[in-house]
Figure (cartoon, rainbow, N blue to C red):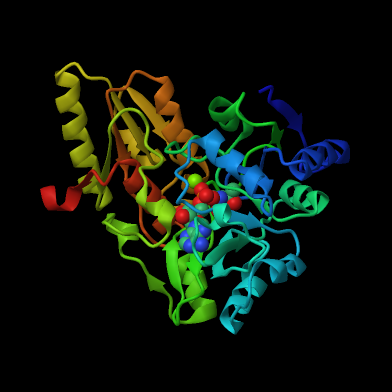
Length: 351
Ligand code: TXA
Ligand code: MG
């Protein structure tokens, strides 16, 4: 398949390019497009055959359901049978934005979108290119992250191209995604809402609106049966083994120093992804800066690109510095621990 690349400047969107991409979607094709979280791989969410192409291109397991993306609240009524006053409060507070709600599905939603579940995931992205594309297509757009299954989500068009060139119809290049981690997923069908995936909207923000929100503990420590089907698969992993070092910063520095020297003495090439402070103190062979520990949003924005970059180097193993789980830190640590297959060193316990 010949994949077309269409550039669309979010500051001055080229409507001819948007039309062209929307037309591909209407005709049952696949289009990767930017959102404020990560790039998505879209298809007409009401056309089961079109949605099947997403699973084929990504190599995604068919029991892992997709999010339907809408441009206006009016589209929601078609997709769900009901929503609670709490769900409505969240929509008012955070849509458009990086929040996905799990709601009871209507019959128009094809089984291939929901993996056969009786619920459907819906979100309204806060990105002008995504909004124009969905509106022009005139249908809800089913879209997972636009990466090969198992790889870190793409935060720019180059990363999409690397994974999906030749496998999809169009890539719309709208520059870097802003937030860098995926949307927060909340199950609104339970009595008390349940956080299924931490993301761009923080747990603290949800609690301000809802009061109580339960959290699936497997989000922190892995475990057997996460409730969002997608959370059970290996994800985000670079090719080289990744180890997350967590704890207070002095303890992290001591452990990194010791472990990196140990592996270098054995002739290994060691990678490190860490905050600016740490990079100034600790040496490694290949280094990716994660931003500043004082600004967790800067770390989220560069996280997946940093993970991906090690695949183009010769590292034998990679150490990642853990950060605080406050705010968007919960999403950062969820992704890092998954990427590491829960290979974690607690530095404080080693002091
Ligand atoms: O930010 C995002 O959410 C990006 C952009 C493109 O919108 N999309 C994204 O999609 O991350 P994906 O497919 O990579 O992740 C969707 C997550 C998965 O963990 C999936 O299992 C969960 O949402 N999910 C989807 N439908 C669900 C449902 N009915 N019940 C529970 N979890 C569901
Ligand atoms: Mg994904």
